[in-house]
Structures are given as C-alpha cells and as structure tokens.
Length: 432
Image 1 (cartoon, one colour):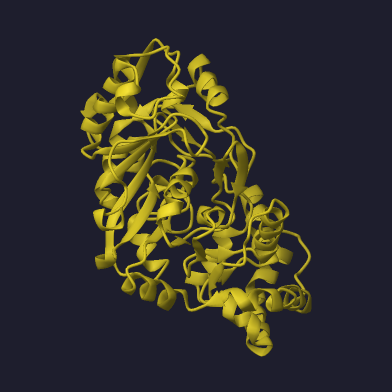
Image 2 (cartoon, one colour; image 1 turned 60 degrees about the vertical axis):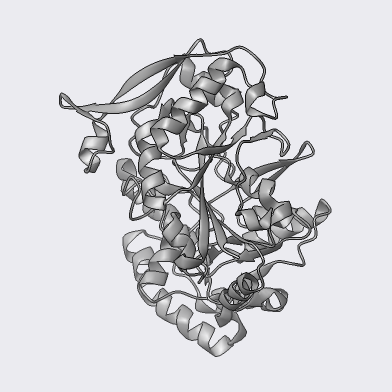
C-alpha cells in the first residue's frame, strides 16, 4: 500500500494536525519526519482541544501507531512532559515508537539558540528558542547526539565532549556565559534512557514492513513549505526540510512508495516570526483575521501575522511538493467580509510577476496584485457537503482551486474534527 504525505503549503499553522487526525481512523501509522517541539498542532476532538508540539497528531487515534522518525530532533524533557499531559487526559501513549537515529536537542542547544538570537539583534530570525537550529547544525556538522547513544554511556560522553569543546569557547569568550559541564549533560540525558528504551526501534524497517503488509502510513510534516531550509523564504526558515522530499529522508520510506501528497492550505495567509510577507495586513482586516481565526502560535504564544490568500505561494508549493490534493482550512473565518481579495500577482519595480520571483530581494519588495470576489454572511459551521456552502463561498473555493492547479479535496468550516466537508477521498481507493 502506498504511503501518504501531509505538508503545509504556506508558513505553517495551516491545520495539518486536524487533517492528520481526520484521517487517523483510516490509517495504521502516523509518522513525524522532521522538526522538533517547535512545530505545534492544535487538534479539537469532540470539543476538547489538544496542543501537540512534538508528538504526531495520530497519537489521538487509538488504532494508530505514532512514530517519531529519524529526521526529527527530540527534546527529551519536552517529550515526556507531552506524554504526561496526554496520559493525564486519558490518552494511551504506549504505542509510540521513536527512531534510534533521531537526534537529541541537548540543553546547550537551547542556550545557544537564545543567546545567538539576542546577539543578532535586528537581524534575528525569530526562532522559537527551543534549540532546534543548533541541534540540526550539530547533526550536519557531525557533532550530534542520537537517541541510540543514550544506551552506551561511553559513546555518549565522547560525543558530548566533542560537541562542547567549541561551544564552551563560544559561550564563555563571545557570549560571556558560563561553560557547560560535561558531567551535568551526561547525567541529564542518561536519566531518560530507561524510559525511552521500550519506545526505540528501527523505524525505517517498521514502516517499510507495514507498507509491505498493505497498511497505510501517513507522514505528517512539521512546519511548512515556505519554512523549508532549501525552498523557503531563507534565512527566515526552519532548519529541516518540511516538504514532501523531506518526508522520505526523515522516515526512510522511498519516494516510489508515496501515492498521495496532501497540501494543507489556509483560506488566508499567516506567518509567525520575522521575514517578508507580501499580503500582510496591518489594518482592521489583519486584526479581524487574527482575532476571528484565533491566530496565536501553539508553541510560542505569539500572535500570527495575517494577510489575504496568496495564490502564487500555493501554486509554487503544489509544484515543488507534487501535491495531489489540497485541504482548505478555516474557510469559516472569512464569513462576514463583504469582498474577499486573492493575491494573483506581485508588482516588483513596475513588473508584474504571476509566479514566485526568483530572488529573495524581489519577494521582499513585492506589492500584491489582487482580484476581489464577493464575500458571504452565512454561517458555514453546519455545512457537510460542498453544495451546502453559500454560492459565494463555493465560488471562492473554485477560484482557489483554479489558481492552484490542484483539486481541493476537503474544506474546513470549523475547528472540530467533524467540521469538515469531504469533496474527494484523500486516501487511495484501495484503502477506502
């Protein structure tokens, strides 16, 4: 059975967790392939809200095996805090499996993240301060610590000594901070080993064996396309590849086994942190979207920057991810707006662009070119079929579909799991 990938098609916070949870009853494995506890999901089940930061949203579905893949960086303290939160609310977490090859976010990664952002001043990227970037830097620099290293104290100590040799010089001489004690880090990380051991497996083998048994594997990407370190609005990006290609490297599942790539798209645009944002609204409509949409970051608590829908971004995301289906979320938030703008082009130095500009400079200086569709006042929350939407809402969805060059297969009309309109089946026909 082919695998299915879910990716965010904007700057994150599109509602990937809800989409994953929606499919949870029809899949067997839900895998997080990238990111860390900087990539939160909010999922509402029967009116009860769950905020997940590190764990896959599939952990809320009793029959699903949730998996943290090799591409994830794991903050162990955050992991067990989240497990404890779910268990206190009656959620069974015993099925969780974690890749032995996943890297660890050590306490010194968080320290470096925070002091580096302060040091950058006006050039700060706007990270969450959770050590994700420094952990990925160590991974690429071959100074990282992996989950499997916790089960060999000698190897763990050697790796921490190697990682801290340079970092302590930076902390003391550049940032005027105290050095990090090797013994303290070793002791802290080893304290998690016994609790982790039953969860740790060869997840690449686990997932490929599941596919061989015709089970359904859903890969739930963290962050989003325009936060991708290669394809996003660099340098205002994350440190991993939250695109469809990253799902392969972050799980060990080959690209020929992927049948569907589902892009999650909000009916408008939001962004957390710094960086260019052509359709950003700093007026009453930006405030309206922020308040009505409840646009506050799950991890950061920061209000999200809000703007109108950007069709160029979505078309680009469809292209580089190979998106087969779009899930459009938060359509209900646009209710009550008389005229709804859609960005269909950028004006840069007198030139109109109908595709994403090649350079960051052009994108940064882009002025949106809008077309406007009539809005609607009707409540959408009870709609469960496309025909139950008001005509103007249907016209808006059809126009977004046309501009994306990809079918819209589901539409979110409220925060709860049930508040979704299914237009096309999101899973391959053989799994229906």
